[in-house]
Image (cartoon, rainbow, N blue to C red; front, side, top):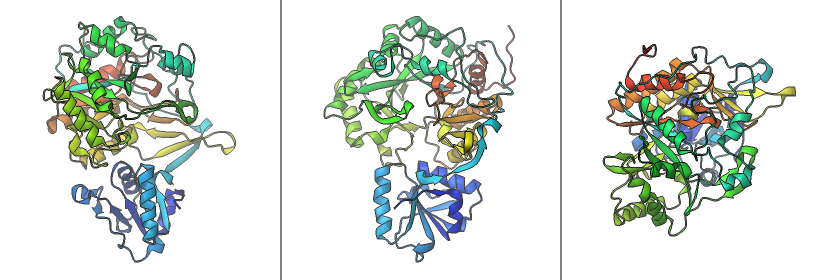
Length: 497
């Protein structure tokens, strides 16, 4: 039986056996590394041991269930996210005689609990309101692709599920600060306002701002459910208006919609599944977009990004049929990218199916977890991280990798507008300097390893506190900072009028 434990409980064992050096294992190993755990006590197994070799100084070896004589004083940690695999491995360890078994997601990695009335975010001290700067005269060092959320217009489905008039602004505008120094609510700058993406002039204005700041294009979320589309209006408006000067590609957001925002993750609103003829239908639907001259290509191939590769059964067959259909209908060869969210293609053993991968957001790389206690010791399942810590872990993981991933950067993460209590924040002690350094690091890494593109989370994820668009408090500060980094300009640059 997999049990819940605190990370401090690990100290009681003579040996710590970690199965998995993928996404979950990497987070766990970095945590143990920064906590100074004795490396001689830790054994790491992974089927890809010959490829991975080591992580943060921990040797990765081939799984061998007869490895230990003393199973009584060994704790097994199955560091894998996928529940079905965890259950299978648990049974293997039980059959091999291991008695102390847990899983990565069952370990309490909370390193600090603070009363909410004593907590303060002291970030943003080096941020100040900035007017718009036109960077058109500067040449970006890389092509920056910003993730773009289209949920800023009404659709019948959202009106039915969430109430009439629902858009992303509904939750964003209602947000309240949870603690001292918490930057909420976040309000859009008057240059764009609480926009409606069914208005093509808004999309045109967004594109103008993006291009003036060196953004190469948008990776637009594409919600496709066996032929049924949601939130496709802005994409179609962009397609219809060839004068809008912005390149774009689509990311298939292949996950079911639920009421997880209100704690009802099991209530499905629309199910994402793969039906028999879906691979061909999907590519047929994509053709009108990939045929557009503004559609982003890698080595001449239209780029299609997949959000959750683990949600696709028989993924090898699906991608093969995509490629076959694309050739049949005149699209030609396609470039398919996976997203590390949370699995990489390597984690699932299907890396040969893809031309590349990107890590959706660095926010998932974190170590020191702060949890806020409410009245009378009540602890809500919130998680708060320091932006600088996420960045440091991110760099460590990148430097220990093969450098094949197309990196992403972010200007923060704060989903309290969507989740009233069980929220995730990664902007504690945020600074413009750290944001600039993250973008610069990702840019420099791309140049060093001959990659043309970087990704940024995000252009307009307002309800997750991740947006480059200007806001009322800081104006164009975040966007200007991003532009300076990708253009190789110092952070203190000020353009004279």
